[in-house]
Amino acid sequence: MDWLDRSYVADWVITLSWFLLSLIFKNLPVFVRDFQPDDPIISHPHRPNQVNGFMLHVLSDGIPIAVVVGVAVMRRSLFELHHGLLAFTASTCLQRLIVDFLKNRVGRLRPDFADRCQWNGTECTGHPSVVIDGHRSFPSGHSSAAWVGMTFLFLYFADKTNCFRRVPFPSRSWKGSALLRFSLTISPLFLAAWIAITRLEDYRHHKEDVIVGSLIGFLAAWLIFRVYYPDPLSRLPTREPAGEPRTVYLSERREDGFMELNTLQEERARFGSAREGQLADEQV
Image 1: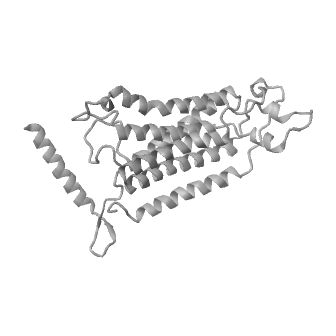
Image 2: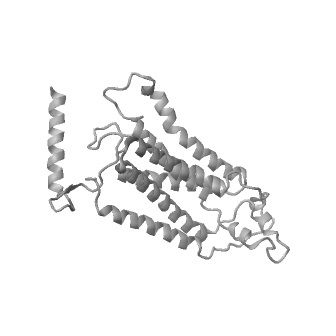
Image 3: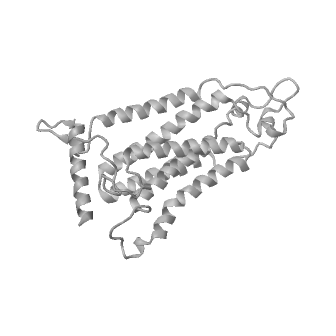
């Protein structure tokens, strides 16, 4: 495991700290807004979720984790397993941190708040936990969780299938079909979009909540994925092998068995030599 570096421990610690902070933010007192009981914006019926919490975790967490583990097993690579799980976990924890912070601070009322509240003329008489949750409309947690998981899977598929990269010698079998690879790659985005739409159909969120939540999930997955993997959408030459994670901490094993970082000058010299050789080949 020449790729393994102690700096990855710090990455896992930071990821865990994001998760713990999200739990703290989630349990902070919610901001209680003033409202008009007859406001039509918050007077929609309180309906059951089409996608409940358990189902959301199965779809947005279970599927990406199963894919990462499956690819790692097929390739017999701890490198693949570690980077895939770290990238996905960090993306999810970052998304949760942002969403849980905003929900309680903004305190926006859900479209079905009046039905939750059961206003009697002086106060809400509905179940306290249901009423409090009615103040957590912005941003949409379901939409954000769906988009962080499915965006990660979209990027992961794009990386593994070389969907958007120029492949010098593409396979001549059915597996080399460009549209097959493209269809597989974008399929998770349809699932994310469907989950987000159900939040509008169930009157759990306003459209702004769903849009912002989806963007938070998309950006969290995109930014973290790019830390640990090459850009799957780029057609430019890259130092990293296509379809493999990046060795984020450029390390080599010393004689004493420990890992140390290469100097920036050494890496620049290596990359420069490789680039010069590539340009020479192109001129020939």
